[in-house]
Image (cartoon, rainbow, N blue to C red; front, side):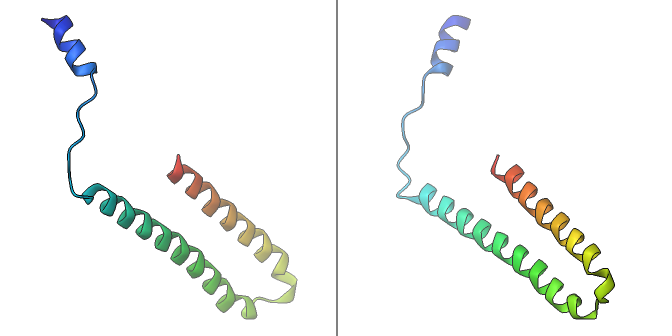
Length: 83
């Protein structure tokens, strides 16, 4: 019985007709992910644009380092999400 059950469980299931429901859900998820990515990057750029005029010129090196760290963090987070 165990061998028969293993064979049955190893076989792929037949396709289920869902009238395109799975494709619509996948498209909605991809759209939301695309918007979320854009909004996250836009929010960071907007925050930097608002704060940058108030930063003293002597501190611009530290600001550039922080911006680079944020960029790498966003890129790393996106790679982890895609994996």
